[in-house]
Length: 144
Image (cartoon, rainbow, N blue to C red; front, side):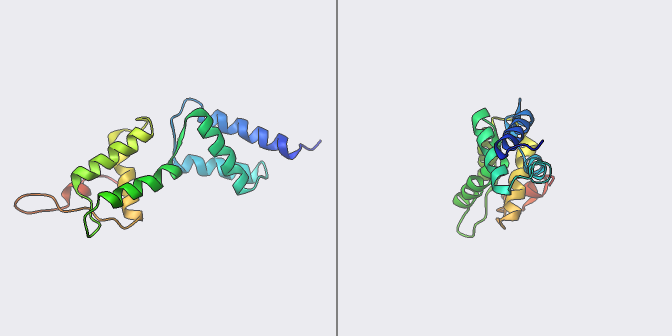
C-alpha cells in the first residue's frame, strides 16, 4: 500500500511538530536533520521540506536560526563603523537582539557564540577596545 503525496507530507509535518514541541528556537543542525529525514525517508523535495518546517515553526511560534541569521548580520553591518568593525557595546546589543528574537531560549554565552560565528562567516571584524592599549581581547575571550 503506497501513501499519497499529501499523506507523506502530512506525516512529515507531524514529525516536525513533534520536534518543535516545547521549543522556542530551532538551530541549524536540528533543521538540517529534519531536512535530511524529509528527503531520505519521506522522499520530499528540499523545497517542500523547508516549506513544511517553516509553516510548522510559524504556527508554533518557533524561531528558525536560518531565518534569524540574515537580520542579525544586517544589524551587525549597520552598527559597524566605516571600516565595518563592531564595537563591544554594539556586539552586546546584537546578542541581546538575537536572544530576544529566540524568546531567550539561548543563554548569554550561546548568543555570543552564535553572533561571533555570524561575524566570522560574514567577515565582520571586532573593533579594538581599551583606553591605554586597545585590544580585541573581549572578542577573543568568546569561545567559538
